[in-house]
Image (cartoon, rainbow, N blue to C red; front, top):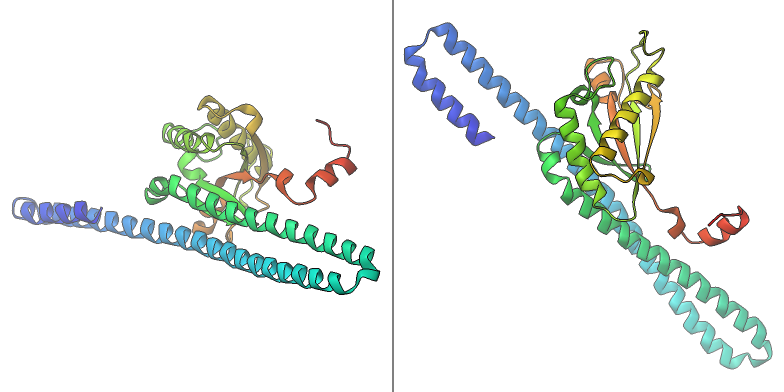
Length: 282
């Protein structure tokens, strides 16, 4: 981008001698606008990358904590085994304690493995979306422990409309190709708006507008190859803002589509027991 802007400046300088001053100033202003846009995209990309790097650092910290806890439990088991040799009269109690510690150790090892898997998944998905992030088409964030792909609706939809623009369809199709290639994952499309009320013949509130937009994205993703059992839609309307609605910039950030990577709760420790208690249907 910077190289292209440099060529643009050179072109302006060469043409300055054969154009009017007004034309020259217009070209100069246009160049400055391109440059400002490029710098703004760079800042947005860096902020998204910083958020992801922080989330990965947090996962590494949790991983280290689990490793330390595993070492402590292993040390405790060794101590119990030594004590077992001395306390033969309390053999039953010692065996029960050892079994409890082994169960705790197994659970801790499961959590450690899950932490490793989350780190690998975040890193992999970040790499898959790197080109789209660098192009300013989307951002990827960690929100409430979930990976979320965010797309500004101003790029996807006209104001007050739930019909995707041509560029919006292309962007959703490109995102779908990446997400559909991730095995054993489901996704939820969430529609968000700013707090400006809408009263049209088609939409009574921002709830309906945001939901229609989410449904449109879901249908486009299905057309792009996403299996229907892996995708769902919801609407938050104006009630889950990501920025203040006091400024135009904040409103623009709140007008968005989020594609949430739904976590697989069946892999959490104790999931089988919870399914039995809840009468899980196979």
